[in-house]
Structure formats: structure tokens, C-alpha cells
Image (tube, one colour):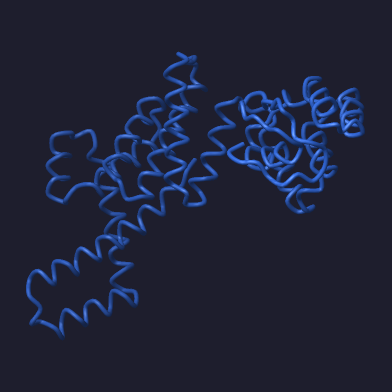
Length: 286
């Protein structure tokens, strides 16, 4: 853990217990519970092992807890039940928090390590924590490349989804060129219509209308999707112009004709940014 927390029961260990799978060291039972909470989707059945119970007994001096966990492990243990017992025994969290942690633990059951990591990164992205999500997705991609992972269709589809959600996170930060590059990678690994559509949409948002038309002319295979993108952009523009903000904008343009061209240009740029904001919110992670 990055820093130690207040000790409630047991003692601090001089030797940490390293949580298998996520390799996080903890020095007391409270830190173990915090690790459960912060990494619930990444915790798997490896946590239910003799090494943990021995550490709790020998290093933390919590014999009663260790004996209870051994009993759970000897009776076809369920991951959620095992971790819930530790959290309830420790008393660090309230019931609602423990319930949410156990729900996340259950969600991760049966997932591969990469699926668990993706789920955690997806949660960051869905909560608008784009920088952390991007870091998590990039870390997953780096590990994939280093390990020379399998290229089975299901594995490539998962990697495509990672790249897609990386693109959504870049789009969330309005970094559309980077988003387009990520969506293009996603399409390369898993050539779905969703990845392709997102790629062209991000390209459109990263280019001026003239540049985009020129690009499509050089890449005619993008034609059908580009037409769909333009229709969506036009729809968003009409929605904006017929709403309160759009009406106000039209009135301002009419009644303040003395505006200099630069002022009107800035006003139009503001509208474009609003349209981009609305469009990027239509790019959910998958």
C-alpha cells in the first residue's frame, strides 16, 4: 500500500503479505481490507490460500480469524464469502460498503486477469476519470505486447475492446486524433462496425470539414460511414439550433450585426465545441 492506515486489530507485520495476482503488499489486516475494496475486480480465488492464513496467524497475531478462514477454506469456499468474513471481522467498513465490494468480487469471478483489469479500467472511464483509465488501458496493452499473448479470436476481440475504450477515454478528453488512432487499432484487432464507425467519427471531430472531405476522397471505402457521421453531426447541430442556446445564438447574431468577423468566428467555435461535447458523450465504453 502507498501509506499505512490506522491499526484497529492485530499488529503490523514486519514482512508484508503480497496479494497474489495483483502483487500488492499489505502489512496489516486493515490494509488487506482496503486492498479488497480498491481492487475488488482484480482479486481472484488465489487469495484463499494457506499462506494468507499463516500470515494472519503468525504475523498479525489474529489466531481466531485465521482458524475461521481455514474452516471456510475447508468447506468449498466462495470468494465473496471468504473476503466478506475478513472485512466484517475487521470492522473497517460499514455493511453497504462490504456489500458493494462483495458484488464486485463476484463480478470478477471466472474472468481472466486481462478481463478483470479491463473491468476496473472501464469503471474509471465510466466515472469520467479518463487519465487514470488511459494509463490502465495503456498498461494492459504494454503487458499484452510483452507477453506475446495468444491470438485466438476471443483474445483479439478483447484486445480490440481495450483499444476501443482507450479511444473513448481519449475522446472524453477531446483528444480526437489519439482517439482515432486507438479506434483504428481496435478495428484492426476486431473489425466490427462499431470500431469502424467510432474511428471515422473521431477522425471527423479531429479535422475541419474540408480536410475530412479530402481524406474521404482519398479513402473511398470510408464513404458510407462518413455520410452517416455527417448526418449525425447535422442532427446534433439542428438539436442545438432549435434549443434555447441555439435560439439565443441566432438572436445575438441578428441583433449584433456589428460584431467583427473574429468575434463571430469565436462564437461558431464555441458551438462546434458544444457539438463535439455532445457527440463524444455518445461514445460509451464497451
